[in-house]
Length: 569
Ligand SMILES: [Zn+2]
View: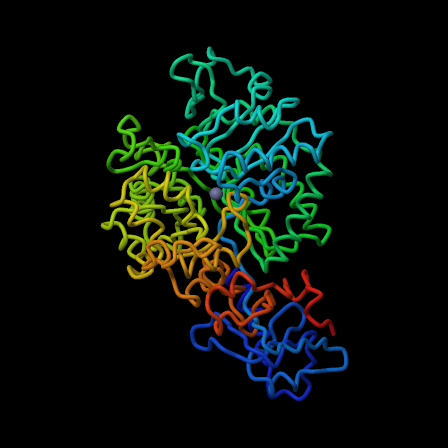
């Protein structure tokens, strides 16, 4: 990678002062360009040739690169940024979610049921009614019931995944199809929620128990899944995304999906740069490490790359499955949650993956989970020495104050998702209640991690929440819902500046996939991955972010999204 970038820079550098300079393929000029380059953050123009950035500077310098075939984009009041990088996404789940009902915006049982009913009516031939995105806070007691889903869909099996992917909601038909009765034992690492009086399954399933139903859902055929993948890529491009990092493929799922990604690559239709990590579980760490290492040999980019494993240290706070240092506040019976790994096994697996040259992502949400993850990255450092390993922790929803400095000290990246801090009813009624005000006061503490010198990267976790970067940016800088609540923002001292948020969506993301020499900022020689936004975000109040449109997205010097509102040359 280092060799490649050096060569590319040599080719790309001589932009000025050469009389025989070939003209640019594209000129974006006469507006404002934010480059994400610390030394020179602002410019007026960008020139692109052969997929590379040829020039970044003033408009006069750019004018000299205009030839008869150059496509000229006059910018006016618009803003050019490096293309966005979503550092934590689930691409194929997102693709499949395009054919499911999305419940994320519905806050009450009635609203959720109405949306499911309408979706079922619009898809009369679908053998299952599938959806995702329900919030714990929408249901009295924090979990939905089969009766509530039967009331919306009675004629077919129906199954709705929780927004966080850690819980499921089945109707009576789906439970029957999966053979789940009051005599069914809980699977390892999961729970069938039961009525305390009768012992009958309520319809809610936690963690590994979700697969009892999910394994019965017919997967769309290969061609249909490929078409959904292409739709997903177009959606991401329309949101300004030029890179995504897929956070953890179960090996079996990879068998089904990797051929689709390879086909898109072969056909020139992989229009988002894709980095993929392989899921590593306590029972199969060695196999996952071997698989990820082998895939890393065959897929080194620049469009499709492997090289990482991901482990789940714990679950989620809403379901009391995140690992906490002290017991949950709302329900003493929940204890401190339960990590998926013992500390020794986790340290050993992370050290082994690191020794194999792999980057390690660790999902850790509770303060104990985060500490275990930091400890495991530290164990790898002690065992294997100081290398450029760039260990990551995903989510970091709450944290002990003692652990803030360790991100910087260990060089561990905090990979966080602004919309997970969306201060909606679910956040207040379930998330904050479960851990109590003291720990909630360190919720999604982006600014504290920044201040302690830690490196943050931003993403969405799509389809957990929308992949719309503007929604994430708005929450990152305001800590408010899209409706502007609460008025002053939730824990507003943890909001980050616009410039900082943009760095976390661009150059820091590139760093997280070891590609910062190649992309992530606008500088001569780098890949021409960029976006044009309808508004100059730096010149408006934050509310303008929500009205901002992505007018143009370019990947590798190729226009992959172009809004009709932007004059085409
Ligand atoms: Zn995720």
